Length: 286
Ligand code: RRO
Image (tube, rainbow, N blue to C red; front, side, top):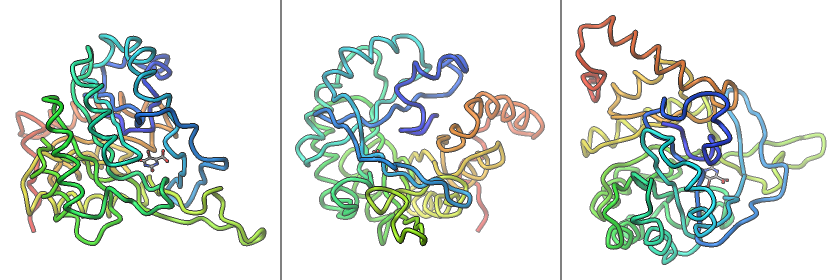
């Protein structure tokens, strides 16, 4: 799958490859109201990573449904719309608007954007809030629900369990790690907002650890994300417990990453005794 926020709204990537090649397209987060996002600079490169503070710029759910969704009609193997609320009650409002719209196969609830509300992560840290929020969304839609969780918490298993209790069908692990990049010459942060979310190969060991912790505790469907650059990274996530994997930051380095990975994975599975790539899921020996 594409990771939310790294593949635009889909059509802008069509000149690179057929959008049916990824198992699913996950789009940039949509909110109830339009947002212009954070002031620039919004991104800074770091060793093995990318720090971002984009701030959820998007046209709002109504404009998304009217202008952007129709352009995706029939183009993806599976279309997953990622969405968030600025307040708790907005999550269910957005989900209710998306529910039943042609072309949407599943929803990914973004409980974990680090770049709004002064990096306080109001919907990420409290199991009771997470459960209540997911339950409110579950009430308004029968679409499959993935809850995308933050790594910036003490005990991810508590949050994961709360999301599943609330009615999520699976979890996307993980959103970006809170970080800071400093220009010591100017004595200023490199991002306009100060802190940002770190992605890319630098966070892969953290993502693998969290995927495995949740798999070991709950054995629920997990979509692994964080620093995937090649087919071996995909296999590592599967073995750790992910049933599917998203690719994000690497797409900025090479837009052809996903089609390349799909071909490499087909060849890799052929070279093993396995009938299906699913045979590897959760097989880590500890
Ligand atoms: O837009 C962003 O700044 C952003 C979002 Br919504 C998110 O979920 N994760 C991230 O690293 N950046």
